[in-house]
Structures are given as C-alpha cells and as structure tokens.
Length: 111
Image (cartoon, rainbow, N blue to C red; front, side):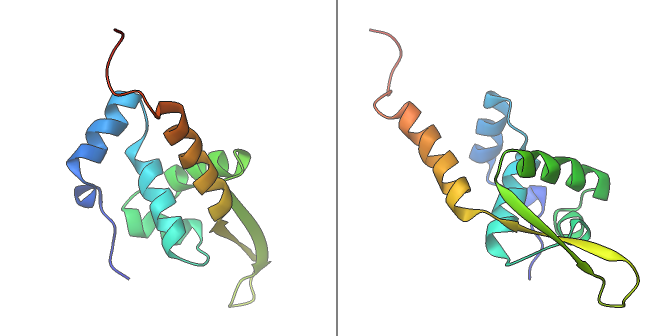
C-alpha cells in the first residue's frame, strides 16, 4: 500500500480544513481507515508519518464519536494483546451527508 503523506492532501482540502478549524490529519486518518479492513495505531502512524500518541488521540476521538470500532486480540507473536481498529463506514457516510445537507442550498451570503 502506498503511503498517504500530508503532501498528498489536495491543497483545496487543506485550505477548507484550515478555514473550518478541522485537523487535516483527521481527514487523512478517516480516508486511510476507509481504504483498509483493519489497522493498528502503529499502522496508521507509519502510514501518515505521525506519532503513535497522535494517532491514538485521534482514534479515541473517532471511537467516542462512533466513527470507528476496535477489538482486542492476542498479538500474532503471542505476547500480550493488540488493538485493531476499523471504520464504521455507515457512520462516516452519515456524518458527511449531514454536513452536506446542512450546507445544501447555501451558495452565497445573505441577500
């Protein structure tokens, strides 16, 4: 899988995120989550070039908001557990649709 790096995020998306106070890393993380079946914090941190602590912080927010699910499993090497994450596509689509609906029909400022 090819790496998703900040430089790969279209400039218009970066500008929109900045203008709305949104964190482009969160947009990148949701995009990544939608492209894989399951992933770990280490996977997403490596893929996006961010720290594990940053990845964990954002994933916990997504989890709290219902956008991702997680499960714990025994590590493949058998030592301890690992937490696997996956996107809740239905919830992400609903969130995007809600934002789109909110702005539908708004094409200019006040009359």
